[in-house]
Length: 227
Ligand SMILES: C[S@@+](CC[C@H](N)C(=O)[O-])C[C@H]1O[C@@H](n2cnc3c(N)ncnc32)[C@H](O)[C@@H]1O
Picture 1 (cartoon, rainbow, N blue to C red):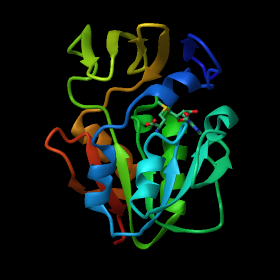
Picture 2 (picture 1 turned 180 degrees about the vertical axis):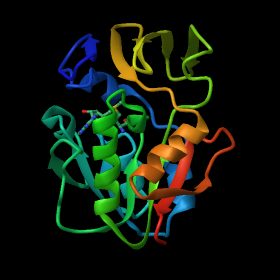
Picture 3 (picture 1 turned 30 degrees about the vertical axis):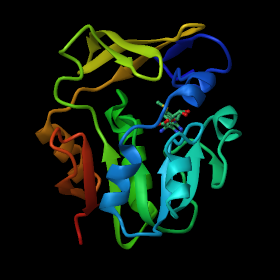
C-alpha cells in the first residue's frame, strides 16, 4: 500500500486504496466526451492509471487506440480492447510515443512531490511531436466544500467526508461510496494546488497549459514548453 493510502470494502484493493469491484461498477460520465473533443479522431492514447477501463472502453468504442497502464494487475485484468501495461507510471519508459497521454483521476494531485514529478516526466517522455497531455486535476473547492455528497442516478452515493491537513501542504482525504448492497471507502493523500501552483508544477517538468477544457479548469490540455 502507498503511504497514507487505504481502502476498505469487498474485493481487491490497489496500492492507492482503490477497490477493483467498486471501479467496475462506477459509471463513466462526461470524461470521454471531453477527451474526444480535445484530440484528433483516431489518436493513439497512452492512458496512465486506467483502472478497470471505465474511460478506456468508451474511448476504444469511439475509435481511439488505447494503451492502458496501471500498477494493479487486478484492475488491468478487466480492461478489454486495449493493450495493457502492468507498471507504476513513474519511471515507465515504453520506448515509443503517443499522440495523447492521459493523466486523469486527479493523480497529478498526489501528495508526494517526487511521484508527481515522475508522473509528469512519464507524460512528456511518451509524447509524439505535436502531441498533447490531457490532465484531470482537482477543482478549486475539492478540499473546502466539505462534507459533500452526490447521489448518483444509477443508485449509489459518493461522499467526500473529510480532508484533513497532515503537514507539508498535504491533506488526508476520506471518501465513501455507498451502494444498497455494499460500501467502499478510500483514504488517500492529496496535495491541493491552486491554478498558479499547478501551472508551476507543470513548468518544472517542461509542460505548459495549452488551454483549460472545462469552465471549472479541472480538465487541462498541456503541451511541451518547447512547442
Ligand atoms: C482512482 S482510480 C481511477 C481509475 C480510472 N482512471 C477511472 O477513472 O476509472 C486510480 C487508478 O490509478 C492507479 N494508480 C494510481 N497511482 C498509480 C501509479 N503511480 N502508477 C500506476 N498506477 C497507479 C490505481 O491502481 C487505480 O487503478
